[in-house]
Each structure stands twice: as C-alpha cells, then as structure tokens.
Length: 559
Image (cartoon, rainbow, N blue to C red; front, side):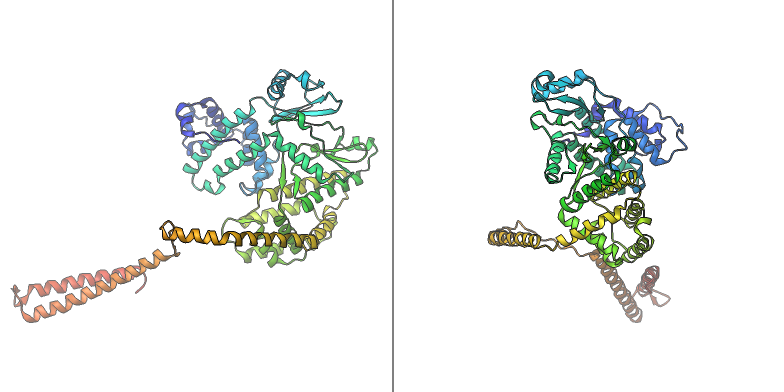
C-alpha cells in the first residue's frame, strides 16, 4: 500500500527539490502561474516566466497537457480522475479521457533484473523463450511474448523498474500541493484536492500490484466459464508476482480493425451481439465488470469469440446498487418523474439539500427529449452524457464504480456502432433489465435475503444482553456522556438575552424616573434654584437610557 511520508520533513530537507521545480515549471509553462502564486509556492522557482503559451487551448486541454508532460504518475491520476465525476467537473472528465501513455519501453537488461529479483532465477531458467522487444508498453509496465518450458505461449507483463519509488515521490509532492491549495486558494475545497490525491493513491496501489489484476481475470473467467463465445486469458500463477503477470498469449484482431475482420470473413453483427451480451451480463448479473472496454482491449478470435485483455481497471457494483439502478431505469422508462427523482437521490450522494421540484422538472424535460422517440433515433452516448450533466447540475455525486459502469456502457456502445452501425444497444439492453428486475423477486433470492435477515437478528439477540450490560456499566462509571445539540439554540438564547436586557433597562429607567420624582418632591439637597440636583440627574440618566434603548430597538427593526 502506498503511503504519504511526513511532508514537513520533505520540504525542510528539500529532498525532492528538483522534482518540485520540474512540476511547478511545467504548471507555469501551460499558463497556470496564477495557481502557483495563489498557493505561495513560487519560492521553488528562481523566477516565474509570465509568458502566455497555448492561448488558443481551453483550460481543460491545458490541464491534460500538463499531466501528459509530467509523466506516468500524473497520467495515471488523470486517467483515474476521468472516471470520477464525483470529484471533478464532468467536462474535465471528458478531456482527461483523452490521456494517452507516451512512455518509451525500458531495456531487456532491466527486464532480466526484475525477473531475477522476483523469482530468484534468470530469465532463461524461468521461461523457455522470452522475446527481447515488448509488443506493448505503458506507464506502469510493458508486455513481452514468451514461452513456458511446458510449451504454452504466454504474454508477460513486467512492471517498470523503480516505478513504485517514482510514484511515491510524486504522490508526496502532489499531496503536499493539494494541502497547500486547500489552505490558500479560496473555494477550491469544493473540489476536495486532498481527497482526490488520497483516492488516487488507493487506486494506483491496486494497479501496482499485478496479483490484483490476476485475481480479477480469474474471477471473470469463472463467471463466463460456461459461455463459449467469451474467452478470458488464463493466468499462470506459478510465473506471476506483484511485479510480473504471466497470462495466456492471445492472437486476435482488435475490435476497430474492420478491414482485418472483413478479410477474416467474420460476422460483424454476430460479434457485436456477443460483445453487448458480455457487457450486459457483467453489469446486470455479476456486478464485476471490465471498466475499460475500448477497442484495443477487445480482441476478435478466429472462431468469432470475443476475448477481453488488460484487467488493470475493473469495477464492482453490489446487488443493492444494481437493484436501485434497475429501478431507476424502469422508473425512467415509465416517465415517473417523482419516483425517478427519489431513486436518483438514493443512488447518488447529494452535495447538499436537493431542490426536488427543480430536479423533477429537469427529469421531465429529459424524458420528453429522449423517451418519446423511437429507439433507433436515440444516441445512447449522448443521452447518458445529458443525464450525467443533469446529475451534476443538481449536485448529485455519482459513486465511482457506478460511473465506471456507465462509462463502460458508453465505450462498448461506441465499439458496437463501429462494428454494426445499425445495432440498437438500448433495445438489446431491455431484456436484461427486465430479467434483472424479475430476479429481485425470485424465490431463491428472497430466501437468501430472509435467511440473511434472520441470521442478523439471531446474532443481535445473542449479543444484546452482554452489550446492554456493558453500556449500563459504562454509564455507572461515568465513561459515557451524552451531548445534545439543538440547532439554532444559540440564536434563541441570544434573543432571550436581548429581551431580558431590554426588560432590565426598562425597569431601571422606570425606577430612575420614580426615584427622581420622589427626590424632587422631597426637596433633598443639594439644591439649585430650589430644585434637587440629584432628582434632575436621575431624570437625565433615565432620558439617556430610554433613548439608547429606543435606538437599539429601532435598529433591530422590532419597534
């Protein structure tokens, strides 16, 4: 697991000063010097160049270019954030989705060193054959073709040397910059930069552990073991570690290579249906799904089977969330705006109190635009993007895995349109949605749920006496304190204090007037022109206090 070191020690010792300067220099290069100045970290540079390059590019485009130039860690962060509309604006997620790894491959000598470190033996002893040149390279690792001593053709993914250390250093710096931004830039906390970095660190930790990817592959292979049209590469656990992943080598045609598919005499319509079925079953039946089904990760085999590769990014949606999502789709289809708004609020995380009337109105307009037309006239990708914008407009944050699921659907819909422009993805999804809705009320599922509820109740009854006894003991020992907070109580108390003060002033004024009248009438000395000075002073004091009280009441608008 990646962790953050004490940032203050890093800054005091300038352990990563060169990298700090490089990062800040690139940020300034793309026109974000205002951020550097606002965060008060410009002391890391000798001077800030006030040039204005890339003026014709949008802010989001420049953010993408900054991440690309900063290297693997930042590219990965951008790719992860492109699936997190709950953390960043929706239009920025679209731009970050364009991020591409542009990292050269590392040497075969370094590959050998990693194999030796992981297995304790040189490459020639671990693999029968191992091609020196990789056939794929990315920011985290690269893939070589090899052969096991038993004769199996395999693809070996080897992690880039020193990548974990590079990532840790960059994460330290990013985390520090995020803290500084939250401290110095007004209103930036609504984007939660520190939370973004922490979420990213967790995601990247999983991607740096190839055993996680291997487990995802094997689980999905088990799910589709009885589906002959789907193939998931086999994992060779004996030749896999955290930094080396050995899997079955697959020969196939990329899903967007239409010419090769045509030359091979493959049925594009059939392939499209198989691919759509694969995604629907992942989403509506299993919950575990391939979160990055772009054409490069979909291979078409000679016998018209589909093979998915690269399981570095997967998602999981639990049964409760799937049920809510299905209910939402059914509610949308029936144009029940009130129930749709209610379900949408349950499925998402609202930033604050939601204006339900405004939300229902926007949902009604959405239904009018998309659900009153024929299915073949609807662009599913555009419809989904419009729905995501509706959620963003009302401050409804979509959970990460749910968004990954939606994004996977959009990706596979694009692949389907490439293979078969006439394919109706929404129409194809209907039977799966209907079937998933019916499964909620199946005897087997209801039996499992009731059994689970009964088990939980029994466990509660078992622990209730001892828990109750423990709580009573804690109360007796004074270890439990109850704090009651009543909203607006301070305001009520303040108003009560003001009222009490005014009543007290009024009593004092009345007493002064009455006492001064008695003093004047009694002609108590000292006297001036036959009038008691004490009595006159009392009347003057009462007049001043009375005017003061009257002005205070008028200022409050409570005369």
